[in-house]
Structures are given as structure tokens and as C-alpha cells.
Image (tube, rainbow, N blue to C red; front, side, top):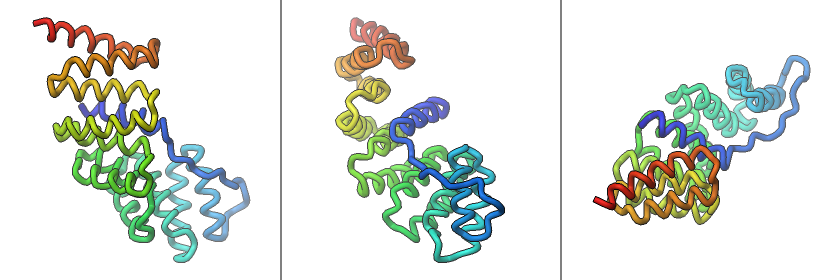
Length: 223
């Protein structure tokens, strides 16, 4: 289940990936908090999370007034990418203290809690993301994942449905909603969702799972 959760989490994030502003880096040895921040921004874009963390730590230490909230937010994101979930949570929490409406900090902390299987806290953070931005596709998908882990298929279906309203062409969400329906024994709706996967992306990786699920569901329904 953990492997599947991480796979689906990556797919959800890929739809609405957090945009990191384009950086201005490559300068000589940075001297100011702004210099370190700009270079860290570049490291984040390059996926060099260790160097990004080092530079963001310099930002935090050098100036209590320069983008402290964003620095904690970005460093939390870097720790999340390194699977250092406890530090990601700590930095995201600090970012939220500095900015209670930090959508990205709630999102990053929710992702960390989800990976730690702390589903109630993950749900709470994704709910805050939705409060800040009700059209945040990924938050509904990830909150639905947490509900499924808690075996709350009804709430998961509601969130998958909202995600589909926002992005009707997200085949993998239909795949997961179909699984949620199947856990409730509603095979007709499950099959309908898996057939939607085949219409939207007939040659994609999700189509293989959808076809297998349809076959199994029809066999079960025929008993």
C-alpha cells in the first residue's frame, strides 16, 4: 500500500507541481541573505536539495526580516524531497507560524504527514490548502488518499469527485475513485470509472490497471 500511495502521490503532484520562481544564480560568493536566497532558488530548480538547504539556512540565520517565512517554506520542501519528513514538518510548521495562509507550507507538511502515515494530520493540512484555494486539484486527490487509508471510502469518493470536476481528464483519479467504489461493493460505478480511464487515456499505464479491474469486477458481478 505504501508503494502505491507514493506512486499516486507523485502523479497528483505532477498535475499541479509547485512552481519555484526562476532564480538568478551563478554569482560570486553570496554575501547577503538575498544572495543566498537567489542561489538557493537555483539549487531547488536543479534538484540540488542539499545545497539549497545550506543556502536557505544562511538566509534564516543572516536576516530575521528577509523572507523568513518563504525560506522555511522552501527548506521544508527541500527536506520533503530528501524524505526527511520530520525536518520538513518542523520547517513547514515554522513557515505557517510566520504566515498562517502559506498554502505551500500546509501542502508540504501534509505530504510529509501522509508519508509518515499520520493520516489525520495530513487530512487537516490538505483541508487548510483547500480553504486557502478551493480549486487546488492536488489537495483533493491527496486528501482522498488519506481517507482511503483510513477506510473512509465515502469521503474519499467525494474528494475524488471534486478533483474530477476541477480536472475532468485526470485518468488516474477515475482509476482511484473506481477502486473506492469497489471497496463499497458498488461495482457498476467502479466499472464506469474504469471505462472512463480507457476513454481518456487508452494507451496509458492506468489503462492496463483499468482493464484488469473491469474484468475482475465483471466476474464478481456475474457470480
